[in-house]
Image (tube, rainbow, N blue to C red):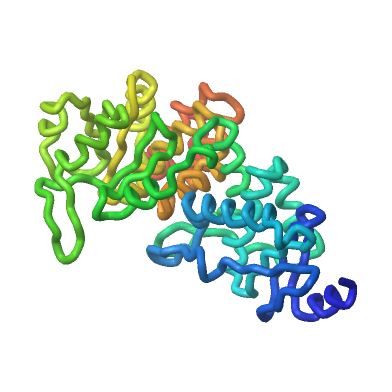
Length: 364
């Protein structure tokens, strides 16, 4: 084992222990398993589908499949006496994704705190993990860290947002596909994010579009009672209301942040709705994730980083550009006093609209 370790160290960026049997390594080349050690890599098995410059974190289905895979290895009779080493490559993007997988496992199954798991992931390593970024072309204005992701997973676990003992991975992967509705639960039984419906169900330029009626069976089955539209009107809301659903329009432009009136109305609707709320904008990513993020911070005490991380793990590509900074600044005010939230939302909107400069502190 000592000679094996010496050989590994000449080939590695980091090699660290999460338990006496479980290790995580960053290796330059593929190692061979030995009598004492079983190596495995998931870099090419769990692959993030990027929109633009984004590269992770990997979605909830991949985290689930990874945990199942690792549990199977740790319980395997043939591997009983072997160390299990999850190794990743020097590719910074793959390394960060792999760290969230094994760190997430440590939080969910080894009952480590996010901080304990993260400390293990950085111990003995000189190389930091590349932060995740939003799904846009522009410069990155907000770094989402591996620790943010682990903290988001832990907070979601504490609030019962997921349970891998009962998680239906096939259902998740079915409905996240565009042809099957492009929808994801952020808070099961409370918030469903989905792509905006169209007037007719059809395929346009190879892209499946769904009419409101296409969602009725799923919504009824899962007690979705309310639809909130954040983009411009493409379909007639009457098609939902005639079918017994409540429908609200809270428009604000693509890629921007909500003003005070919209944010307050969104929170009020969701706080006073029986059943689940299905939220959509055009793609169901930016505006949708931003307002759901406000609710997570207010009612579940998520930080901005935790909210963005969890929403992206559920629905990759969510919360874009200035929306990230908006959530971060709203959280900072919430942290000091929840009563400042409504005042701050108005202040942020006025400043970003150029109506008041950042020198005007009177709103705070």
